[in-house]
Amino acid sequence: MEHFAALKILHVVSTALLFICALALTVWIVRGRRAGDATVQNRAMQRPWVFVWLLMGLCLLSLPISGWWLVHFAGWPLGQTWLLAASVLYLFGALSWAWLAVRVNRLRRPAIVGNTRFTLALAVFSVVCFVTIAGLMGAKPV
Image (cartoon, rainbow, N blue to C red; front, side, top):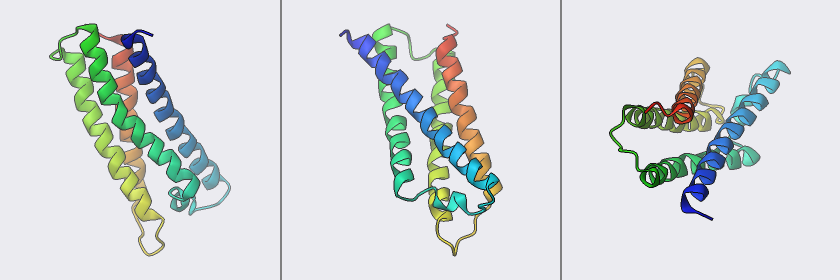
């Protein structure tokens, strides 16, 4: 298989896994909250969900590497505005995701009470960053 096609598949699969994992966590928390469990987000770092968080982290680590190689193989200059914007958005999105993971991990301890609105804002900001990046990558406004 050609390197470009293999990298493109890896990049798309990583992006899809990232969004599927985030969607699964969101659906699980929303369903728990609607069922009346106010502490469902405190259990988001228990054993089965740690795998989801680790898978999301692995996807986040592989995306810039596979993305850089895709740009390199395609021959696009790294100074294009849409690539620079996507890189900056990725930096902010990944940092907010890491901060979100730390906050959710801290929420599982009963002694620590966190601001759930700020946690939700971090999650929404991270999702908006990654959806915008996916839009930029799909449109490729050269």
